[in-house]
Structure formats: structure tokens, C-alpha cells
Amino acid sequence: MLVQSQSLVVPDGTFRSPVDYTFRLSGGFNELRETHFHSGIDIKPSSGAKKDKIYCIGAGFVSRIKVAAGGYGYALYIDHPECGFTSVYAHLESYSSRIDKIVKSYQLKQESFEVDIYLTNDILPVTTGEVIGIMGTSGFSFGEHLHFEIRDTKTEKPINPYLFGFIVPDKITPTVQNLSIHGLDKNFHKIYDIKVPLGEAENGQISVIETIEVPSSNIGFALQMYDRADGSSNKLGIYGLHVYADEALIYGYHMDKISFSQTRQIIGFFDYQEKKSSGKTYTLCYKYPGNDLDFLAKNGSGLIYLDSLARTKIRIEVEDFFRNRKTIHFEVKGLGQQNDSVPDKKDFKQWVYEGQKTEITESGIQVTFGKNSLFRNIAFRMKTKNESGRNTSYKIHESNEPVKSDIDLRIRPDMSDTKWKDKTIMTYISSSGKMYNCGGSWQDGYIKCRINEFGTYRIDYDTVAPTIKNINFKTKAGKISRYKFEIKDNLPVKGKDVNEISHKVWINGAFVIAPFSLKSSILEIPIADLPAGTHELRIEVRDHSRNTAYYKATFIKI
Image 1 (cartoon, rainbow, N blue to C red):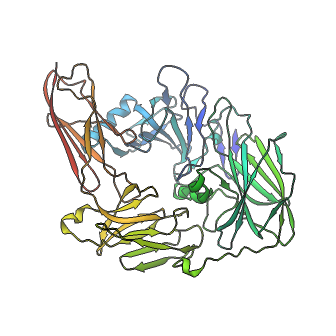
Image 2: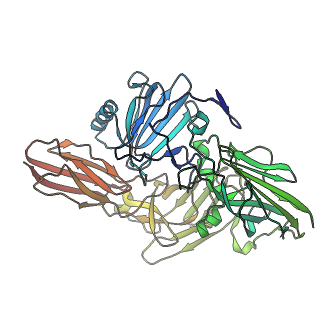
């Protein structure tokens, strides 16, 4: 049987389930996360007391194994050459014994807990139904589950697992809480935002009886909404949305696949300004000029152009994969005011246009926008702040403006000290004053860094080593099977040009594989298999600036 979507035809029944029970979801495909679309589905554990086994969904070979302190944690990638897909299993607690043997050999060879291993098809072949691991919470997982993906092997694009028959019971229609009407100027910036609470649906229909009068000729819509499936209270994402104006389709999509190269465009897919101010997620029903997401319908931008006193009937259909649908009906009327709001030139430095490369240079700073840096044109603002004993702080535009892709930022330190050259970093200062290490590198007397968020940046110096705090270490090990330590750095990291803290552990001079979780900051050192006697423990923890902390101790096993 073939399952056909908006843009894909895939064979249903190609794969078996990765678990041996009827699963429930805690997360759906292409859900809206803070900075990315969710690229898979999150499968909840069974109700049993035992840990859930994870099964290979189809014949193939293990093509990649990645162990990380954050991210996907213990992750496994299996290629299925006969059909051209790759399955991904993340946040595992452990791998099967024969996979684990390969992982440990690489960890010991590289003397690193974190490894990223690529394998050819003759190293680890797997069969349908083979146990490949145990469900867990490794990496940035805040509850036991399996993050499961299916990707196109050639393009590496994640595909909605529902298209392969991985479905859950679902007869629940999506919930639509609020409608927002945005008045937009010619650069797609909001002039006003009218919130329209929506009542209860009757037979899947929500009607706003009174005509909504809008003081603008250019408008777009946004919805606060979510979906649920049977047997689960978790809020899931919306699969499909279509907007009609006087019965003509002006905007729409189905969540069938996503490209990793486009996943950051999520912050131009929802109302970023609303998210920053209220924490609420309103999905835009129109697209910015720089939004080129592949899954969006090609016909229409979602904008409504109202002539003076014109009335337009709007219908918005929201649905899940199983065609449980909620439809919103309302009418908008234009009042004739134009919305060509342009900021006073005194309030900004210059216009920066979407789709154009722009370089802005002032004393001590250079900001370079690429062609794809912005979703829309901006009236660029920049302010400086001088503090005694610190380098100049630069407020780069407004933090509630979404950035589509990297902006190159170069800042020259005010204070020059050669002894701190290797410790010089760029920092991001949040609105609450919290500092983040963005790393960076020297270039012609400047620190250069790629940023993807507007806000306040400054040059600082990181001379503080990480900390190593004993949790359960005792000289006499007794029944302790794993020593635990908390390891932390003084600055959290942010961006592409900085590394998280790294660690190494030795016992009696031999490297030891010691699992570490960035989520909990806990380092675990296995000692259960050590022979009786006296042993020497050494821990080394290093941050991005190569500040290093050491811990040495002797312990006894009886």
C-alpha cells in the first residue's frame, strides 16, 4: 500500500515499529521548538516497570553512532539501502552489546567520551526486529522517551514518520485558542496586533459572528493552537493549515518533511516578537519575504490587501495528519487607513535589506549581513555603552527581531593585554544581565564571531577554570560502583564559535570512559570492575579558553 501526502509517495508497511507496544507521543513531527522544527516523533515509555527495548525497524546497517553530553545523547543511525531511508534513534540509555563494543573501542582510541563514528555497510549489519538499544533520557532529554526519525538517506531530510504507518490513535480535533490580526507596513513589521479570542467549536466549526474592522490595508493572521492524540495530555504540533480569502487559497502547508538547512527559519514561522514578550506561540498564517520553507504552498503569501471599506470572508482550516479538522470563519472589513509607517531617521542608523549583503562599520565594530541573514527589511539600530574597567558594550539592533541566518560580528577590544590574548572571547549579555560565552577568533585585531540573535555583545576575558565538585567520592569505595562529580564552567555557551567544557579521566594512568551529562552537569566514573587495592584517580576539565581544572585522589577498593 502506498501512502500519498502533499509532496511524497512512500510505501506503507515498509518498516516495523521501533517499540513492541502501541505507542503514545510526547512530541510530534515538525513541532515548533524555540529555535528549530522538531525533526521526529517522541515516543513515550510503556507503562511497564522494565526499561523498554528499542528495535531496528528494518534491515540495513549502522551508518553512524554519536555519543554526546548534550543534544541527542546516545544516538544511532541505521541506513536501509533497499528503500533509500535512514532511521534515527536518540536519547538512548545504552546500545546493544555488539554496538556498544564498537563505541567503546572508538572512545578508548580517541580518549574521549564524546565520539561521532561513521561506519561502512560491512561493519555493523542489522536485521528487522533486532534489539539495538534501551530507551533513556541521555542528552538534552527531560523525560524518558525515544526520539525517532526517518530521513531520506541522500538528502538527509527528515520525513514525517506517519507517512510510513507509524501512527497513533487520534480522533481529537486540534485546539485553536486565539486569532491574532496583524496590521503590516510595507516591510512586514507590525503596526498593530488585534487579539480575537475564539469560542468553542460546533461540529469542528468556529465562527466569529461580528465583522472585524481593521485599520489597515495590509493584514496577516496568526493562530495560537495545538493538537492532541488519544490517551495523551501532551500538546502536539499542527500537521496542516490552509487560509482562504473569498474562497481563494492564499497560504497553506502540510508538515511532511523539513530540511535541516531551513530549520532555523522556525523563528520566522511563528510570531517571534510575541514569543519574546509574552512567551506565547502564535503561528503566522503569512510568510515574510525571506521565508523560503520548502513545505509552504507556492501560491500566495498569506497577506490580505483590503481596499477602503472592502469586506473579505476568511476561512482557516487547521488539521492533524488524520484529517481531524477545525475551521475558523470570520469576515474582515477595511477602514481605509494606509499603514506605510516609516521610523524617523533619527531613530536608526540605516536600512538593511533582506536579500542583500550589507556591511556596517564604525569605530571598533563591524557588522556584516549576508544575503540570507534577514527575513525582512529592518531599520538598523545600534547603541554603545561604556563601563569603567570593561570593554565597550554594543547593543546590536532589537532582540525581538528574528534573524534568519548568521551575521558576522567583529569587535575590537578597547583594552589590550597580550597576556590575555588567548583568553579573549565575545560575550552576549541577556536582558537580565546574564553573560554567555560566544567564543570567537582573532582576525586583524578584532574578535570575529557568527551570531544569529540580536542583542548586546561585548569583548571579555575568560580566565576562570571550571569547577569540579565531589558528590559521592570516598577514599574507601565500599559499595560505590560509580563515583560522581559535578563539573561546571563559569559561563554558559552560546552560538557556533564556542565549545562546551570537555573532560578526561584516568585511573592508575589509564584512560577511563566516564559519561557526562550537560543537562545535569554530572560526571560518572565507573569503578565496579576495578580489582581490589589502592587506585589513583585523576580528572581534567577544560573550557573553551583552555582554562583547566584538575582533581587528584587516591581510593581503596576492598
